[in-house]
Length: 153
Image 1 (cartoon, rainbow, N blue to C red):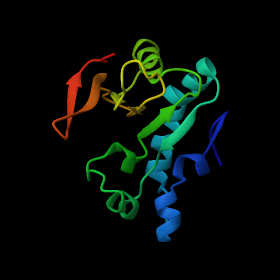
Image 2: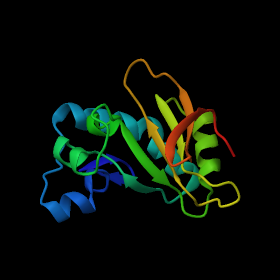
Image 3: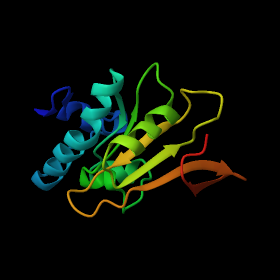
Image 4: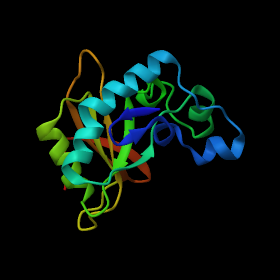
């Protein structure tokens, strides 16, 4: 099943952890509808602008989310979020482009190291209603993950 021109449901639900642990990671109808909105409004647009776009983490059903230690409130569990990278384009540049060209709920440049363009990844979420346009950078400080406003290069 296709979520958009260039992306399949299999790409969005693929998980090494789910495979290794024998977990079913099939989204329900509501989560599938959310995923189609996410891909139509953000991910496909990123693909059309940058070319190849790799999904590092997509949909996570309850069992998979627990297995990877994800937050119970994660938008990944609702089919509303994806972590992506575009080989050959720095993650800061991808995040900056999304911030300027797409509607989104939350955009997080995660664990980016300035001077290393392919470090980290870009987390982006989309809701059919009420997108907050929240922009954050996640980084480690004193061994803890902290979220700072904006995109920090």
